Length: 349
Ligand SMILES: CCC(=O)SCCNC(=O)CCNC(=O)[C@H](O)C(C)(C)COP(=O)(O)OP(=O)(O)OC[C@H]1O[C@@H](n2cnc3c(N)ncnc32)[C@H](O)[C@@H]1OP(=O)(O)O
Ligand SMILES: O=CC(=O)O
Ligand SMILES: [Mg+2]
Image (cartoon, rainbow, N blue to C red; front, side, top):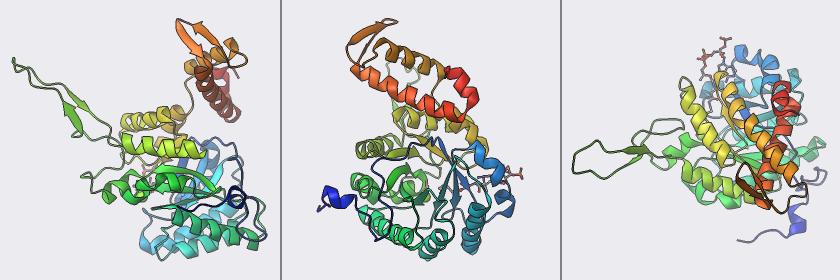
């Protein structure tokens, strides 16, 4: 594939558009909270909701009825204008690029609240060509409205073709913020035989061999999403962008939601989507590091001030590599502590 030269890659795509970021802005993004902006009742409470989440996302795509598409777009703009989001990120999920609504979504939003928007989430991204199109369009709007800061793009990985192209999507533009796994659309795209939104499936399992005494055979459920999530995490980490787990649809099953989020956290994800207020606390709990882990990570950093050598702590060998792991945990704890005084106290920060 032909790619741009390094200098061209970082040039603004429109005269007057801001320079692309070289590094992602440092932001705590444990949950991307989805708000249905066509509902006046929900919108009215966004001012109270905003300080309790890291990101508020106005959803315009799936889950918004066709007859409410315009109301959702208008509602998102009204909400964006009315609320002071402070340190909370303001994102939107626009309709798909091949839908009748995308062009009007992006045109209206950039014209009216482009200066407040942080990230545009683009659904059903199939390859780098989708990112290039949105990249160019955003640059033109940034130039037209003299916006000082570039708006970032977050792709949803939710088609088989997107998964095949995940690495070129991740590196398509310096505007790339990250990616979310979209298990519902991806299941449909792959003809997986499930009706769930994320999480496990009891029939996806391995079973032990039968024994001569006919004892019940051990069964272990496997993770349907491990392959895709791991592939996405590697593509994002290599590109210096952020991976996220997407939606978990069974709001009543908080334990399963927590387990899915925790697998994603342990594997390298920065956060997950929250679709209902009950999922906010779960995401906060999972994507803020455990105080005991933070305390141990601090001991590693203190024992190896320059990050080199080998030491033993509680019988476990530490060296340059575990120092790097510890630094990731302590740096994340610092970000969380800056946002959450209660956790700051638990972390001793
Ligand atoms: C599957 C692939 C995907 O694309 S996932 C992303 C697309 N889906 C979404 O964005 C769904 C977002 N969530 C929602 O629209 C609602 O949670 C749905 C699913 C409709 C359920 O709402 P409802 O029946 O009102 O639930 P409830 O009675 O338990 O609500 C309790 C109170 O909480 C509110 N609430 C609900 N969801 C949200 C939300 N996402 N953000 C903010 N507030 C929310 C409800 O309005 C309700 O408030 P109140 O107590 O009546 O004042
Ligand atoms: O958009 C999300 C999905 O799971 O589909
Ligand atoms: Mg989807």
